[in-house]
Image (cartoon, rainbow, N blue to C red):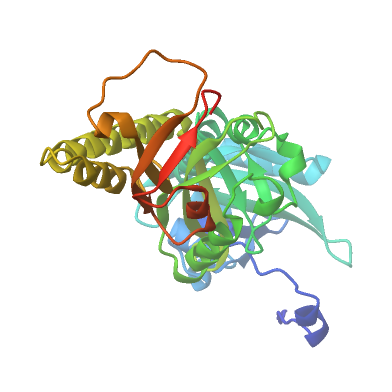
Length: 359
C-alpha cells in the first residue's frame, strides 16, 4: 500500500506548521510483525538503525534476524504478551546489527488491528545511546536555564516570549507566566526599545549574534533607580536551518555601570583640573586670568560663566569693615558654551554694578 503525503492550498494558507526535525534527529524506526513473527513493514530508518535493507528484512523472522540466540526466548515472551493482552511494552532490548554487533535499542511496542481483524505487532525503536545523549543534553539545558543567575528568554520569530527563566523574573519584576505571548516592549523597561528590537530583527535575518550591548532603564521592581543591563541575542535554528526564533540573555550590570560612571566623572574632573592648571594664571594680569577661568569652566562646569571682581580689589584699596551698604563689582569675563539668552542676565565685561549685601 502506498501513501502519498501532500498539503492542500488551504493548509498552506492556514499556516500548517512544518515538522520540527526532532524525529529525524532521533532516527526513529518502525517495524511491523505479523502473528508469526515475520517482518511485514520495514522503514528506511530501520535500515539505518539495524543495517538490513528492506529486501533483506521483509518476510524474515524477526527473532532469527535481529535477536541473539541466547535472548530469543525473552523476545518471544514479550512478543506473545503484546499480541495476547493488547498492552504495550516499553524498554530497552539488545538487537543484533547486520555487522554482528549488539545494539541496545529502546522500544515502544503495541498491538495493531487492520480492517479485517488481523493482528500485528508494531515496534517503534531508536538507538538507546542516542536517546540518553539527547536526554542528558535536555536535562543540562533545563538546569542551565532555570538555575542560571543570568536572565534568559526564548522568543518566537515575532519576538514574543515563549519561555523565561527565574533570573529574568527577578530582573524585570514580571512573573514568568505573564511574559508568555507578550513582546519585549511590554516587559523590558529600556529607554531605547526601538533600537533593541531593530537589532534583534537583524540577528534573526543574518544569524550573526549581537553580544554584550549596554542599555539602561527603570525596572518595575525598582522604579526609583536607573539600572543598566548587558543584552546578548542569538538566532535559534533547527537541524534543517529553519529559524525557530531567538534567545536573549540579560545581565544586570548596574553596579559596574555606576562604577564606570564614577570613574568617568573622576577622569573628567582631573582633566578639568589639569587644564585649569595649565591655562589659568599664565600672567598676573587680572582680566586675562578672569577670561581663562571662564573659558575653562564653560562648558565643562556650566553653560554660562561670568567672572565679577570687587572693584575695590582691582583698585588695590583697603577693604573697609563689612556693612549693609552695596559693593561695586566689575565684570571681567563672560563665556557661554552656546548661544543663549541667559547671557543677558550677566553684566557685560567692563561694566560696574552695585550689589547689596543680600545679593
